Length: 122
Image 1 (cartoon, rainbow, N blue to C red):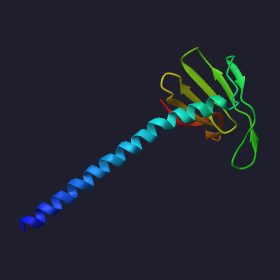
Image 2 (image 1 turned 180 degrees about the vertical axis):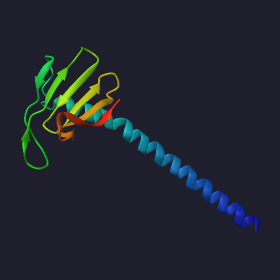
Image 3 (image 1 turned 45 degrees about the vertical axis):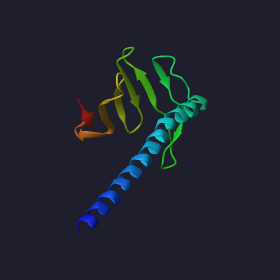
């Protein structure tokens, strides 16, 4: 019985060591991946936001409809407001957290059409 237990512990130790080696290879690949993404993002033709009120080019949605998003910065370094026909989203620039998400096409009540549904409101 002792020889079986020793053999199983040896096999478990070898499997653990091999798993550790593969985990190191995996984490090294993950460390290289952000460099590839940043190079690809730098080479793409994304327009820079130069003024507080900038229009983003037309984007084709899943439905095939073309829509335009408006990006506005309220104060330098605080929040960015992104408006599309379906969403009105406010993003905090320190951390990139979404602080508010509204649905302007869908009012909370029929008699108040200017009061949109708030999906997120901190």
